[in-house]
Length: 158
Image (tube, helix red, strand yellow):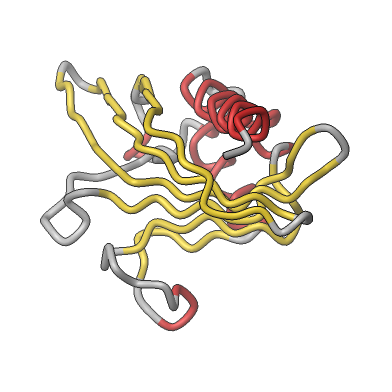
């Protein structure tokens, strides 16, 4: 196991979580490869995201639109804006082909909005394209533990 690579990839995805929790969306958008996709599937076992229904399947345009909706103050589902804290753990390198690294981890997300605290647990898989001494997100798949259950409105980026 390449511990140095694991630490670099884990630090990168931890930065991504921190940017989201602090609403630093411009910086978050800059972490993405232009062709990258952000996916939250309904079926936790699904791999054909293009041909199935997902909670989110965002390309670069949709990511920018999602950020605009979150920051505009015009969306009922985002006013007041939820406060979130993501905790990432159990990092595991799944692959490294020299061009991209695949990393899987656990995410525990706490959301506080309108005096209600909710928790979401997920397996998150990242495909991180090498970019100099860092990475760009090529794909992020958030597999919510309760994705097939009735979910409350997720008005932010899980």
